[in-house]
Structure formats: structure tokens, C-alpha cells
Image 1 (cartoon, rainbow, N blue to C red):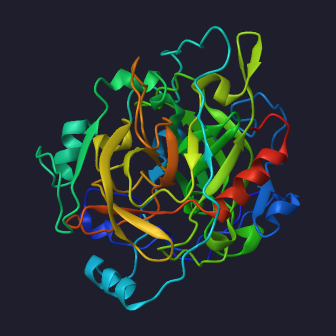
Image 2 (cartoon, helix red, strand yellow):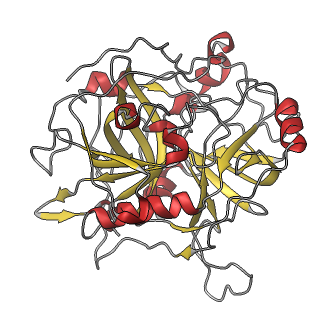
Length: 407
């Protein structure tokens, strides 16, 4: 099942800035996977089934994710646009880009189903001890010191911090976010971020599941999603993948960003809690979504960036829409880097207070984008996301129809 690659290998995130400037390369071929049938609503999307699912309730039936493999997985670098931020903005201004048309659609999220919530298992560890440098060492090695950055040379304001308290990850809506492990065949194991958007579906970036070329052979594999991950802990278990799908814009985009739909959905297998089989959304809850909602807006961005706490602690950034990024994308202020790819951008994040009314878009906890790209330079401090449009709707419709109970 192992495949080799003649393409350049990506350079994982490291505090040494001279190494973080490498572009994400086209990587490896995937062997031992089959092209999945996709509903007619999305004939152009591509998907693969996990043909290694022998025990549907097993965390890792193929035995690939050993404690050592999990601990050593590298943070996937963010794809970077060509040139500087200023050059990218000049290109956007010089082009009359056609708007990506799609119906505006809203769907509400859900808190965990069932009368009794699943308590977190704090003893469930993916590997012993903690991974990576201590938070203080990671900050010093990255050159960031202990200053809290809230503005870059782009002029995009934001606030950025780890969760306060960190145990907030054990509560909805935080716990619907998590860390995504995966293998790039012939290269190694990597990490992105993602979020639960339906009872069995995880939304992430297209570049976290597929190299951007090669059709069905461009997929990565061995996806493992860990909601509420924290320094090696898996309080709500780790969930093995069953099926993955991405958009035509990403699959045929040669890995270039900005991309009109750098998006993907992973269907995860059910897990057993005591004697009861549950879907992931029954345990963590899930986010709703709203299309065509990235500009204007204000979002909370959640992920596991390697430049903060070594990517071992869930991180949050709050900011508002800043500028159009071109190719159906929008830029927001953010200081997250490698490892934050695929993390959710959520409007109206939180739990409504009793008596809280008003507002034109009051529905809470709706995903409006995911982290797609950024800059190796630490001065602009912006990240971009594709606008959720028709390709997202096609993607989700196909994922919902793939198996009864997915949505």
C-alpha cells in the first residue's frame, strides 16, 4: 500500500523562519483506494472510500497510527499566494473577477443529541506525555517572544489567544473543533484542523486531503480526526475516516491559492461509547453554515497553529473581514500559521443568553469559511478563506447522500 513520490516534499512548520518559506508541493500517489460513486448533484466532485475499514468501530484498523507516528506528525504549512500581500492586492484590483454565484443558504447547527451527554475521558491519550516544545519555548523559538500581536502591516486588526480556560474545549461549541491527522503517501504524517458540520461529517480545507492535481490519485489517506484535542489527549476518542470528498476547483487547481473552493469533507466512522454506538455529532454537536457570508462579517477562527503552543493547544482568533483576496476568497486578520489549515471560521460563535434577541443574522454557530492560505512572512498577519458557494453546497449534498444518517 506504500507509494513513492518524485515531487518535492513539503517542509513542515519549524520555528526557523528560513524553513517556513517553502511552498506546499504536489505530493505522492495514493495506492489501495477506489473512486467512489457520487450523487448526480455533484458529478464533478471527486471522492474516495477507505478500503481499509475492516472493523467499522476501530480507531485505526490498519494499525498505522502508533503513538510514535501520532506524536511525530508534522504541522502542514499553509499554502502561500504568489508574491507579497501588496502584489496580490494589486492583482485583485487590476482584474474584474466574475462573482461566484450561489444561492444564499443557511442551516443551523446542533448541540449533542440525546438526553445524557458523553463525559470526556481525560485518560484517553494518543501518546504518553505531551508533544512538542513547551508553550513558552515554542514562542521563544519562533521569535515571537511574549508579546500579544493584534495588528500586522496589512492593517487588519484581530485578537488572538489560546482558550481561556483551556477546558473550554470540552464544551459545545468549542468541542466540535479538532485536530486532523493524515498521511501523505511516501512523504509522512501531517496535521491540519477541522470541524464537525453534520452528524458524521468533518469540514476542512481541500489542501488537507488532496494535492490539487491527479484526480482520485491526488488524495492523501489515513485521516484521523480528534475533537477537542489537547496535548495528546483525545477526550472524545479519535475517529477513523470512511470517505472523503473535495471540490473540482481544488482538485484541478494544481495546489495554487487563492482558490475558489479550497474545501473538503471527511465522513468518519461511528464509535462505541460503553455499549452504545454513536456518530461524532451525537457526542460533540455540530456547526451550521451560511453561504456567501464572508464579507462583510466577523468570525471566530479556531485551529491548531504550530506557531502557538507548538500546535498542541486549541487556539482562537477573532477578526472581521478585511479585503477581498481574489478568486472567491476573503482576507481576515490572523496570526495563525502552519497546522491551522482547514480550521473553521464561525459567525455568532457561542451560546445565546436568556433574553438575547435582535440582530439580522441571529442564528448561532454557523461556519462561513475555513483557513485556506496565508503568508510565510510574519508581518502581514492575514489569512484567507474561500467563500462558501455552490461548490460547497454540491460537496455537502453529496456527503449527506453518501450514507443514511450522515446529515
